[in-house]
Image (cartoon, rainbow, N blue to C red; front, side, top):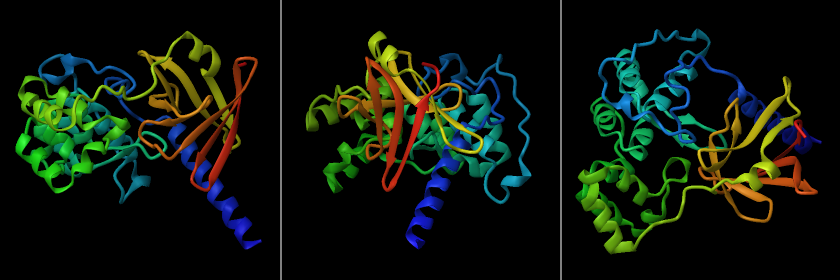
Length: 290
């Protein structure tokens, strides 16, 4: 009985975390969409005019933790909106080291966001304000000596992926001409890395899987599946943004969480349920837009 009670409590915590992911946060419009499922606006990297600053309110209920809305805002903005990053980190320097879970344990820091989108000015600003450099940020910034030292100490780090399952090679490519030495080193040492960071979406996949799946929470939690910007995506909230990888006929895992399984129940070519397996926790949601 005690074990069953523990399992029920663990399941409630899991569902509550999904419900929290689905809850809208006070993120400014300029930041919304600047995440891995949506291409960032390159004009926002200049830090120049045309990017009005936004007044961010702090949620006292979050104290002493960082306000979740501000954490999500700084991570989202680090994909390409330097003005918002500068404002938030200047006001609250600890946000330079913050981390946001996009879902299923796909954690991302502001520096991680800047690294895989090639935002050098944002990355340098974050590091100057206390962000912890990584092999991924070194690759994007073109620091070939640091990347070489990491891999000399442990060559298996080459297979370590960053946020959203994005490879080390892709981080180096994001750095452009200034990171070409890293690209050349990785290519010479390990060969080309052309594996896509997710599953390319198409009309067939959209028809089969795309929609809303409702899970038994209080209030109910919805997980969305969509094809957007050429990728099959899953996640909570209005716009799912975690790319997925196929591991079976109707089985997938999010790119940022290879141990999680998303299993669709399909009848007559259309999914009618989605089961999420994360370690000992298993939950099933019914499709509500059939």
